[in-house]
Length: 354
Image (cartoon, rainbow, N blue to C red; front, top):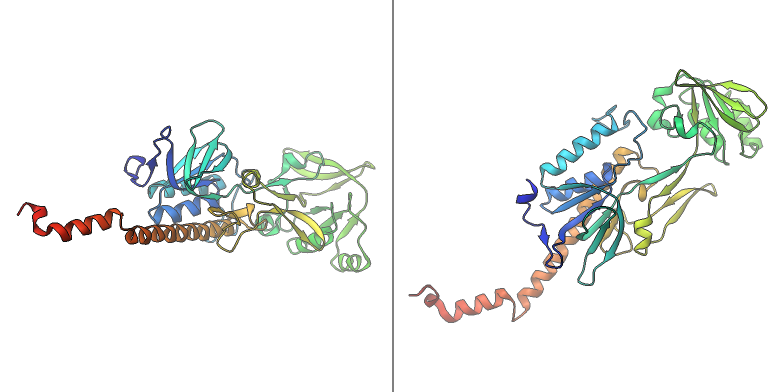
């Protein structure tokens, strides 16, 4: 179905603004899965995507059953084709604001492009990885600088691994990555000294602890080869694990009045997210969230699943609203249906000129 045959897209008489059942802000796995679910439910849906996916530095998607090893760009391209194949629309652009309309729904404003209106919003803007301020970390991020063992552990199995400690969870991180390699070094960097129990665990798993601040990464032939310390030492490593702070990209949502919640682990803040129910509905009526903006730990397959749930939740909400309006119209003595039925009762066959 093309835009020309998507009959449920309406045009507002005020300035010709296009109105959709749902506007999805963010075109990653969560946003496209939500849009696909809604398009298959015969909803008019527009996905607005800024084109800056979080996993762009990664070469492959992992842990996605049936799509293992797919390039992120290919997964998104095929997802777009599936959405548009059911009549959904894709627009590239930056959403700068959304505002609630007095008559119901929302107006979505773009940095460069026309405003659009929506009955419901699905926000899947993801999160930002705030990386440790160590020279070289940002440049190697998604290549040899990693954070998730379930995303990248297999690819660096049996290699010399380093763990860059920046908080109290570093020992736990080192113990986890020990599953993928027997050669793991914990660089204490700016983190506190491990406690007695943690030290015993690290020793028992043959994890080397290196004290001293890390000042940079050594790269040879465009590959990570070592970790440099302030005292001049360079420890040979082929991959470095870091612990980013995961910050929800929630500016659009906070501007609408939603709060951001800090997520803690063992008393340590690891990031922020926007709270929602299991279907992604937020405290603000008409606004749903899915993916990393709502759950920091979602991998691609989980984000896609969250998008499907949100799409189903939004459709159910729209069905409930449409049913309520239909019942109200049927009960009203001045509704179009009531007038038609009254006319038929009064005129009978005369309405056909008999």
